[in-house]
Image 1 (cartoon, rainbow, N blue to C red):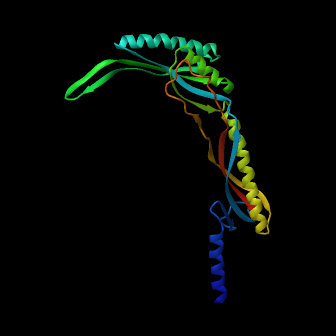
Image 2: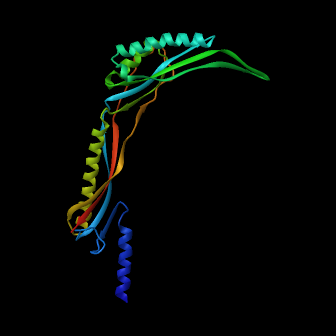
Image 3: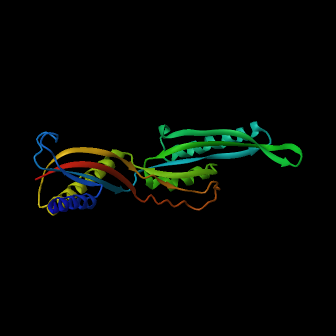
Length: 243
């Protein structure tokens, strides 16, 4: 009877001591994975890859005002045409320039106990431009502002080939899973015999936005841009057989 109590206490302690990310169990012969003769160990691990971005996306455009909607829109069209031409001269390809917003709305003055008074109209036109050389981001912004652009909604950085960074993170995740499996096996007085199963938990690249002033003037100083690095993360779950 004493022996049974001691065994039960050990089983409880062992269950508590093993973290959720790594679970070991001996596969029963009748219900286990075919061909498994040792102990199964499941490990979940993350891997990361950090690299400098090589592409930037910027949203910029023109905001104009006029006494009528037509006047505001015509002035906007004139300045927006000059802005897109400046983008092309700065090396932005036609396929990398896309209109993201066009709007015209009245400017109203609110009065007590009276209907709102329309004092004019505001027109907005915004494009999204992809810059495939991050070293040119500041130069492109300055060129757009010099051509009449006065609205910038920020810059975001990314990788032109995100799969390459994700693959690096995947390799790092597998390496970490193997390292931990070796650690558990050594602590148990066993060795990692083989990999039984692998599943991927997904991966993502942390966005890297750079906020900028909503309105800029053509006489602004040169725009400094720091692309930094983007962290890409991947997760895997690996089942090992220990013997």
